[in-house]
Image (cartoon, rainbow over all chains, first blue to last red; front, side, top):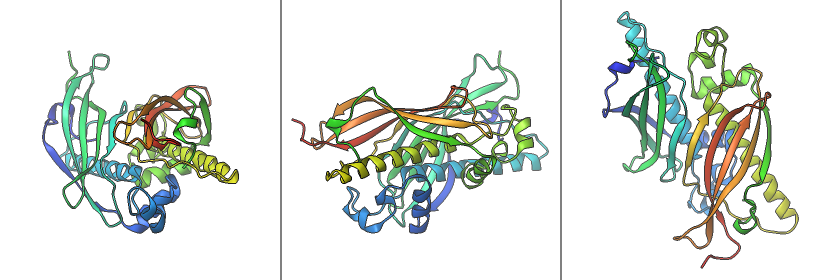
Length: 161
Length: 161
């Protein structure tokens, strides 16, 4: 839920938030989903090609997902507060170009952003449009560490012709 | 860790395992990473376009990841048992074509498979090769619900020319 397709502005960058990857959070995620030694142990991290313990790339992705959903929830709450019904979001037909550009180390803080890069009509579904998002994460040195192109079907106010 | 680049056979499908998406596990994942109402609540699921409560697409992806790492760990254990040092795996330059083809509902069981679809030399890194994997998940009706192309740098026995 969130803004309607027609109201979404392309090429505007939205700040999603900042997350600090603590040792504890890195280990907890890795234990559950990605138990590779360099995500679990400082010493194994030192001996890896990264030179230190790193967060799973899927954790940097999961944190982005959570921030995006929280942002959309805030947007929908604001709309309800103004007496509007939020637009339906989903499903997502999938994702493209998931890239982990640099490692995320213990103690790194990542700032996440999202930007609509394309708005497309749907030929088969006149009640929705398709949004393409460029999502990015930057560490405390301003270096790009994560990027992902996501796609989402979003409800329109008016059916397309 | 796992098989060396030279020993990896392309076009062979490997079974990774089967996972059943319980209501409890779907809710636990959604609470942490993807708190959309149709992943948290049966009634909201019924009112969604899916017609019932569904698992987050990122959960179907996370389960695949965990199974893949477990498989590679088993492979490395076998190699050590035979007195060999397992090959180094990683980093992954990223992923492509993450697709959630059909919803995964409460109680669905998904069978995951992986298959190397391409082996490439690395121009800049003669000590490793690049593997492309086609990963898939099928529900209990045999329907494809998840697919993802992953890439991984893998240690070679002998440096490429």
